[in-house]
Image 1: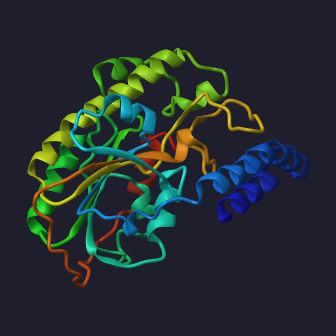
Image 2: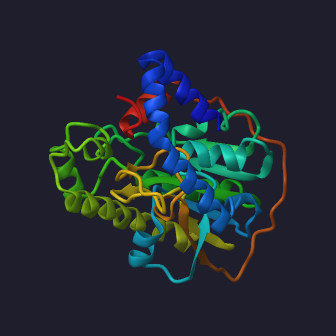
Length: 307
């Protein structure tokens, strides 16, 4: 709700009352649909209340694309996420608690932006925003995997969250990197949303799925080394031209805040069992230095969140 008020204030200040009213009217069907969705499915699952030793988060991974391509043994279920964006997901799951039995290996700029890396929320945060692949403009999944393996050895009695950025844009597979050269915006979803796309939706969907296949290789390497019960999930999904229902909206792309549709908040919950469970214990948090505003802004811009 706070996000919507801030957005309304911005529109009013920048464009005036008439534009605010016009925008509000276009949002009404979306809000009605949100109410209906939550009546049917509930408000979602808190990930810290679930049973796991390691939680692997694939950023912006839709349930349907995961279900079609998952190469790992295990039991595939689904959950309703608490957010349709990374920022909302992180706020709703972690901002009001202390999880000193958990280490977070992070490649997402919203974790430090929200201050969750340095306020004692977790026992430790392994932040990878400085370990950025400047050519790909994202954290390479190999970097995330190695950091997770190191954290698993360093903190053997802690729950582990490993947050990869893929399949979220930018596209880093062979086809996707070529496609990215044809896109004028960092976010491929904006030109599609504005009907100004220079590439086809089919090609975007192909590159998006290629990103998922790309990260699966490194997730597989991580699974080979992990003990305990591992769950592969996502913070949220992504819209690629669907309309919110039952009150039809315009076609939507990307992952706007506060939109609750199956494509956005139904996420995979793939359980990989192990013979041995970790003996988890709580210890005082390790101090984190945090990230500068410049680094956070640069990383968000690379991921398509800022112009």
